[in-house]
Image 1 (cartoon, rainbow, N blue to C red):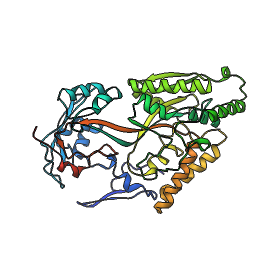
Image 2: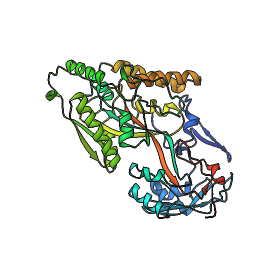
Image 3: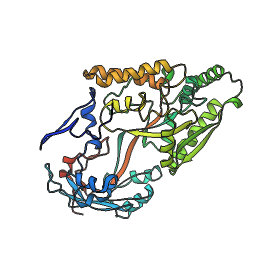
Image 4: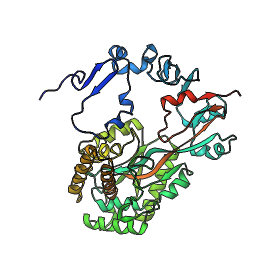
Length: 416
């Protein structure tokens, strides 16, 4: 069958000026939740027609938002400025202007905060102790729906061996990393679906039933030796070189990788080469690893929630053909490949199941099997550590990091 040029008029319909009708090609119990993501936002058609993919560079020309604010100014690489949208249907903002300056380095923004140039900023671990001492409750720490994880390509040795993957997982002390590296601004975790997300499973364990986030060095060593025997390797020298690629430019991330490589050296006796890389190049390399036995071997990235449904953390990451399944879960030649394909089918069934309790239970079961096979190696759940000036009133922090549109009406700047 041929492809249609547009879904407008086919499955995306506007039967009247106040109604949008969307027809899906299959049942999707998560679909309404997915509409809370930015992919459903209304944009000005005339700007898209005029500028194509670059329409976001011209939002101040009349298409600057259908929410409580609209764009009044956008200077690429410098800042974006918002003013109240007089046509917004909900509570009107009290703020007359919002300015978001862009900084190349996170520590530069904290310096701007100290100088009174910005009213809110995130905090790096290096500034944490100082930020916590600021008066009038300026410091805030809020858990986010955001997992920092590592993953290995199932098509590249030695990570086509499940026991070796499990050994790498159990050899690390996530509690120590959270405390010593991140100064407790992250939460150690074994989970794919983060705490606070529908479908979070409090009973989930690491491989081999390990409940702790401190790992289990004894089990890690045993699994590693079993994996070596399965591969027919009698010496560590026979193991292919292991290179861990991660986004460079962050001292905290450098320190985490250094801590991990030391733990693998201490527990497994294996040397892992750290390979910091430009983030944009890493994204390309990750995508190129799909179905590629010569692609990336081992890498670090993170995922934060698009919408409040566990499908975002499971099927979207690990299903056959899913764009994020670049580690090749299910489509590989490991001893667990057949079971992994069953998990993929289980996830697809959960996606269409109208019984919310039943589908959440199915996602829980699938997540445990994903963790057992170390589809991801989760290390921590990120918290948002930030400071806000005491004269900013009405601002409420949440696990998504976004302010709901109607909440802006309650936010104001007090006299100071």
